Amino acid sequence: MDLGVRGKGYLIVGGSAGIGLAAAAALVADGAAVAIVGRNEERAARAASALRAEREAHVVTLTGDVTVPGEAERIVAQAAAGLGSLRGVAVTSGLGRRGQKDLLHATDDDWHDTFEDLLLGTVRVCRAVVPLLVKSGGGSIVTTAAYSIHSPKAHQFPYATLKSAVATFTKDMAKTYGSSGVRANCVCPGATETETLAAMRLRFAADRGWPVEQALERAMVEDWGMQVALGRPGKPGELGDVIAFLLSERAGYLTGALINIDGGTDF
Image (tube, rainbow, N blue to C red; front, side):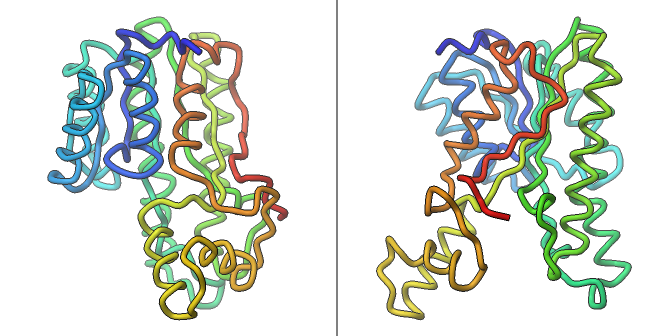
């Protein structure tokens, strides 16, 4: 499928690894130019080099942290300058590690950190990019929530709360800026085997004597209580492909949607 992205520029915040990098790879495979942003300069440079080597793509590498005031504006401006223009942005950053706590043990600092990481970073990027998209006649925004917003857990009060806010924020953007040609959609990934879960797979196998190819799947059921129709975690590329589609011209009538990419997780 031709995504219709050839020659267009896209910014991927969190694009130096995992789901974001997979989305960038899907875009450049169809001829798009991308700017990838990561907090670690060396890691971002390696990711960009791999994309260029594989596809001879136009890839801009940026380093920054959108939880820091002023950084989102700088990143968006540099991405637009480096690519010539922006047709879309995906925000895939924000792990919310301090948000994995229950109500009684999550401190004010935990809530503030999760707010900055999951919500305000997304808000800052979108606030910086929307005027550019409106001025250029439209474009697409993809934000990242989580399957957990459908099934809040006792151990993740801040995380699920702020991810839910991302979904509401995205719907508001879709309704507010749709008449200006700006689309906004929010994806809700389930368990995805990025570097963190890949390392956990190896650890479960070593500690419990489980076969490596079954270790993470067993932990998902036995430890985490997850029932997934496909019986496995997702792969970054499977999520990246969906994000690339949402950013693309092929999703031209899709906006304001909350899209589960969770393998059929039973909440």
